[in-house]
Image 1 (cartoon, one colour):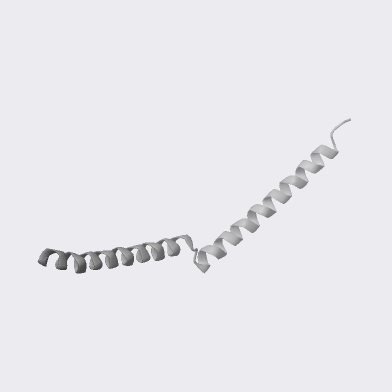
Image 2 (cartoon, rainbow, N blue to C red):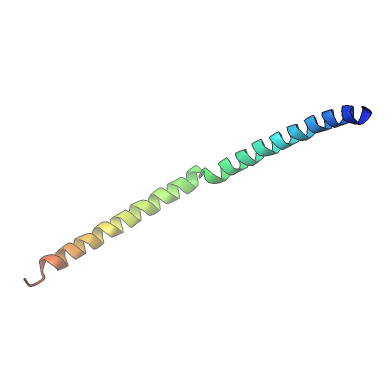
Length: 70
C-alpha cells in the first residue's frame, strides 16, 4: 500500500511533465514553421522578382512564336 500511494503522485507528476513537454514541443514547432517578418519580406521580394522574370520570358516566347513561319 505504501508503494501504491507513492506511485500515484509519481504517475501524476510524470503525466504533468509529459504534458508540459508536449506543449513546449508544439510551441517550438509552431515558432519554427512561422516565418518572421524579415524572412517574409525577403520571400515576397524573391517571389516578385521571379514573377517578373517569368512574365518577361513568356513575352519573349510569344514574340518567337508569333514570328515563326507558317
